[in-house]
Image (cartoon, rainbow, N blue to C red; front, side, top):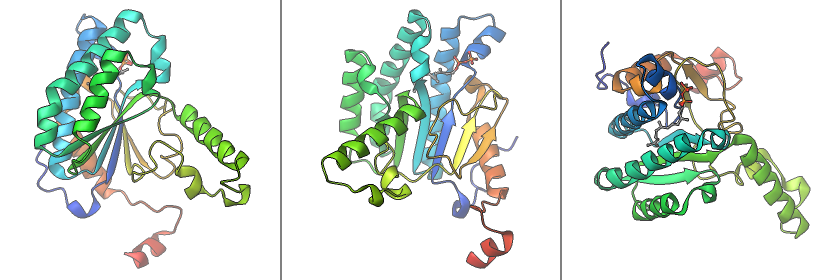
Length: 250
Ligand code: FPP
């Protein structure tokens, strides 16, 4: 597979890539290893993919690192994931600064243990002014929760008279989501072959191109991403319009 990124035309690169990183457990099982080893190898894929995205000029990379449903996993696995996240944040800070990467988190991060939260907040603060790429981690994130949270905030605004019901539009609603200051994802990738959205960015992916690959997340590296980006560049995004309208607009 040709994994050279130099022939990717910058004109039709996605601004925002979102990834459902799935298959760490299956990767480990295939090798008769503990699931946690799969997550550890998965963290290496995170490092690689962040580097590639920064290199090719992606503006926002959103990674589904921990869903609200993931709290149901065995305590040992949850602790291992927290440890991996903390180590990742600590070990990558220098490289994030060097490469101008800003870290952000979306989700109910206050549910995280204090030690993880402290590191997360420190790295977000330290990288706040970086403008090279936004690395957006979805942590204790659920799409329905996000939409409910937005609706509740809007209800409060209306109750206090700061907003009128007739002023609610799609744009106004989007303004109450975690992602209100980011472009919507152009490309959503899910690894390990499952054809599900799993409560990820439900509002934001209305017009997103979806790619599902059978590759398990720990095996998903530069070459696989470049291949998907090539496929993406071949696709035509119509946003509900006809082919003729799109051609005229270009
Ligand atoms: C899905 O695999 C993956 C997760 C639930 C967590 C993703 C975490 C990482 C990639 C590692 C650490 C993250 C960062 C940001 C450093 P699964 O366990 O559901 O796999 P399975 O479906 O094969 O069991």
